[in-house]
Length: 315
Image 1: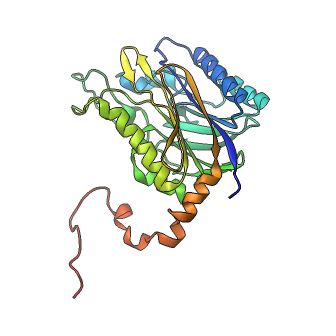
Image 2: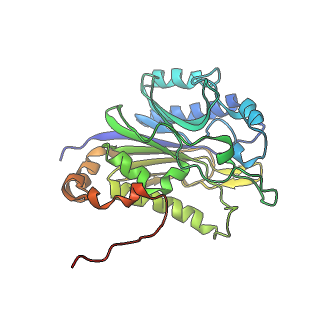
Image 3: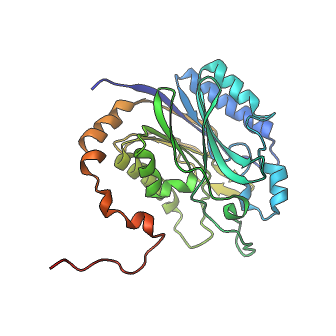
């Protein structure tokens, strides 16, 4: 099988503090973009909410959040240079940010920008975690359900930069439906940005499981859907609140081929062979030959468990 090399980079960001400006964040993104281009990357993946601190940890009004943290245009005054530099360096990028639409709607969003600096795809986060009510007893809040609407555009794959690329965000990675819907559209690469707290405010989850389940989700999804996964973290201590790192590139074999070693700004790179995914799609996860969607109806009929759980065998 002929190889199809694709230079793939993931740009992890260390913490962005509440007092840091967008211009400061963009300067850091530019340095990582330049490093990615120097290593031969065709695409660099930046984290979720890569322009600001992870603001859903704070209780505030929606209007306060809009004024401080949301982007009414993309590109905007501070982010235009990312698009110009991408065009100059001939590199595409994925970028996560808080989107304010012209109609005043709010989404946790990421975009795909091609090597000519054009926005070719947009995804609005569907699996929003957390809560919308104030939890004053918690050490911090996780208010994505307060500040964002559920994404309204679905999961899509774009044929760009000589690859078929899908996008998702953070909590989406934990849901198998995310990956299968993208794989059914022929995804070869799935780009993912995330901001994952090291502590779960909702239950006494052992700390080591945060990283374990993160990597487990990426590896299982990559293997079961025969895709390359490029996952970029925002990591480290933001205003005393720690975010996991673990930025990684995972092959369709389920193997981690590159992983960040820090919780600071760090670039990882892999010359990914897209033909490896083709081999797994042909010989193991051949959907056309082996899937039986007529038996999967519960996946779309039910949100959660409910009776009846099964039917008696036919006599």
